[in-house]
Image (cartoon, rainbow, N blue to C red; front, side, top):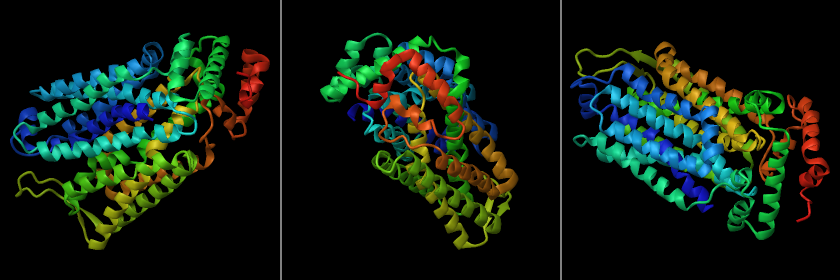
Length: 496
């Protein structure tokens, strides 16, 4: 548990890099130092690039050809250390910038760090966690993100109004990255990676520190058998990821990850303060309440993932988000009207006005209700689920593909949310609500994985629509690779 908790620092970096930029770009010292603008606001192009270049950098390193190289060749532990170092480099580039170009490059480099960390941390946590605690420990990833966002808002409040305070913020966020880099030296490697590299004694030694003796021996043998089965089938070609059962699991994982973004959570993170300030709410108060709700609502996922289960949390989460988006869209369509910028007021921007005060409070309450539902369900559990469902043979590459899908969704949200808000105003939330409803349907469909060993999760899909036709082929491969030993392994009754 302590290993998984410490590795969550990598997710905190993700939250920090998402959370700190929103308030900084509104500060005059930032505009003067980077855009060399004394009055007015950062250009739409600058805002869009600051948000989207992070996603582009993440897509590069989360891309499976790159992420799987680090994860499989360097190992999970060394990949986390590499991501931490790259994050520090990206932050230094940003804090020392004197113009847009260097800042954009720094955001891109930071994105590369976050992309690699997002591909490896949940995998590392899930592979060291026992089956009975795997859901709870893997949800720490999302808890780390929400804590990072909350911490970024706190640091911003303390620093951004100071002279060159935005540079101090970018320096401060290097501290947890440095702690992660140094601390990972003392943490164990993944036992699955060690067995994969032929280091069974080292793998057993790691397992004996985190399991009982009997559990450690049994799990090491199961890992070895699964890897031997994969080797008997040969080194997987990339095309195999998109064929048969693995291909269908890839589609499922990519769908979950893209939906996690398209439901609109990061639209609230990136553009929420501006939206709610324009309809009469204090943006600092909105940011503070929103980040606290996001952080506190992540705790139920930690305690319920291995009790209520992954499927139930995602289902109730998606239903709550659908309701919230519907209310925001309805109230906005009925009571919110566009307001042009006032040329007589310096720094004035276009916005909205609310014709009914109660409707404004319903919109604000719905926004917090949306964040609450995302934080206990779709936010953390999608990462947990995607880290569990793939066979060991394809796991690193497949997780890389699904992580890229998440970052593509993040890029879409960053780029197109401002366009939607400009074109259809609060009807944008009907669009998010549609994707939330798709989340309801897919959550009702997927099988429950709580308490199931990673090596046996494939069996859960045998009777699912879309996977039945792949059951016979997978069974033949298992028998061919493992012979008569496959049956006792599945039953969990092999001799020690």
